[in-house]
Image 1 (cartoon, helix red, strand yellow):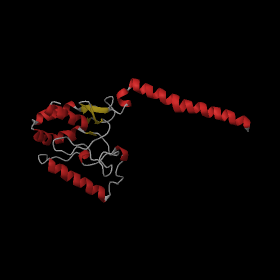
Image 2: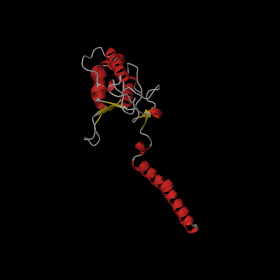
Image 3: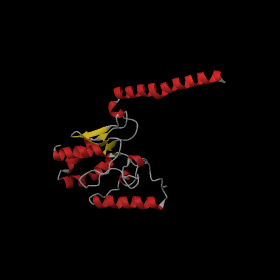
Image 4: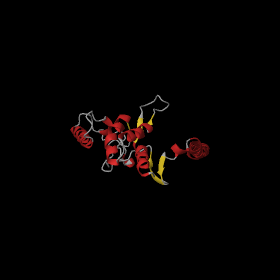
Length: 193
């Protein structure tokens, strides 16, 4: 029995150092070298101040900003600590009521729009933290944002055009607009900051 304990403890120590220290240090070093922005959370700074991450949605409710997807993360919207969907099925009455209420609120804020409300303005994402909307959802909001900000709708539309992100490698996923980046660009356009 004593002949087995020493090799077992040695193997345990060697593997602990390899998998607990050396491997994480190597991967962290490689990530910091090759993908430093992503390795540090894809953080966005504005005027030297940390304002968010391009990977986590934020709630914008002011009519002068573009709105992102609703969040189902509990009492605090876009709470990364409570990431997850509502877990309500498509036939659940509470989900139907929530979507109906969101559609009514979006229609009320966009009285000039006659088309259907884009789905992502009425439904929460699976994680509850999606930072993107479709270009169609952004264009749907152009008239409202332009009116509140005192800008020409074409100027705001050009901002949206400039912030449409292509799918990964131009083939995986859909075209999207990062709401935080778009709203920061809108503030720079209006306030010059």
